[in-house]
Length: 309
Ligand code: KG4
Image 1 (cartoon, rainbow, N blue to C red):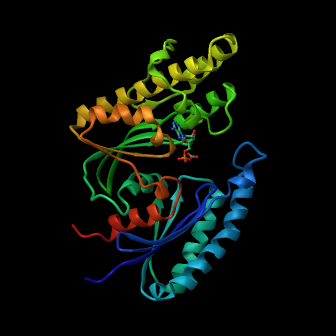
Image 2 (cartoon, rainbow, N blue to C red):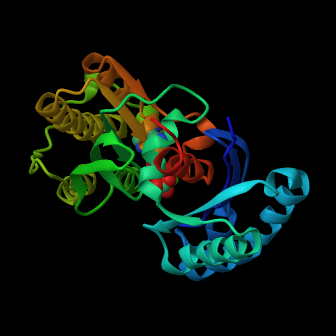
Image 3 (tube, rainbow, N blue to C red):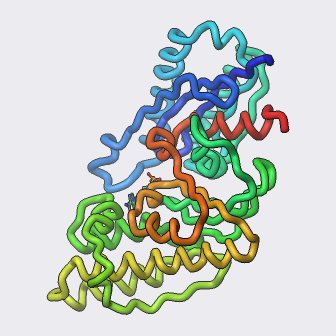
């Protein structure tokens, strides 16, 4: 059967990434992480991010082209991230995609970054198992989707304010932990000492964490003698138990047995432990495809636009 070759470009935030794919297999994905440039700013500066992309895309493309020139002769499509993300950074990727589309005379496909994350669990691994629930939990988003097919993805619960990872990081900072706080809170978690009661309830269709965040930050300020580990453990138990409760509600509602988790918070040990109690199977991406990368953009484009049956 004729092979389909694709080139994918990801520039939505601070990582510049370009991948070459043959059908659903990743031939090579090159990603340049620009974290170092933001160390002194305490976060990403959009202007610097877009300048970095403008330089990186040509360096990475040249490297891939020189190594895999024969595949470029057979290129069938170009996929690029068009939303959500930093506007000018997204434009850098789009301009490259449009120029290459003109050069190689192949169609371009704009791809949603979050949908890429949802399907990243299946790259170079398991077959697809729709329908499934997909949780994307990172420093930028907390969303739950019902995935019936690559073209039928329904957002069930949307991010209303702070993303879950962002709250972990802010509470971590208040507890004296350096960024990112998520893995550090997780590392000292002990359910036996999670005995501080934080009140926390939410509507079914939103993830809203700013109230819980303020409550925990105030508690830290007003109770300097309570051990950090007790506060961190109580916070983690509250936020993850609530997250699990919500996922279980939708699992029952839609009768689905599989869950896919993407984004940095998917690494959380307590979350994983709790999920195995409720789901027959859950999927997380291979390490190299869990952070922002172009392979997931190409993979999702391939299964959406080219995969038969
Ligand atoms: O998806 P990701 O790598 O990129 C961004 O969204 O920027 O997610 C990073 C987030 C950070 O907020 C970090 O604290 C959180 O994921 N994180 C965790 C854990 N590992 C990373 N949160 C809770 N538990 C963890 N083990």
